[in-house]
Length: 61
Image (tube, rainbow, N blue to C red; front, side, top):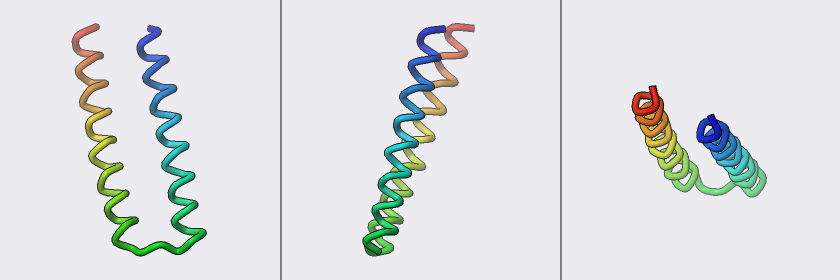
């Protein structure tokens, strides 16, 4: 149970960081390439988190 709570907190922090970075990009109007690279990285990270969570749930269940 504690593991799920910690995971939820980590995901929330990561989402918060993503929002801050996206706002930063918007504010300073950075290049589209940088934004696309960042979004691609975030998609990969999200996939890894989802796969890891699935593994944890399967192993615990």
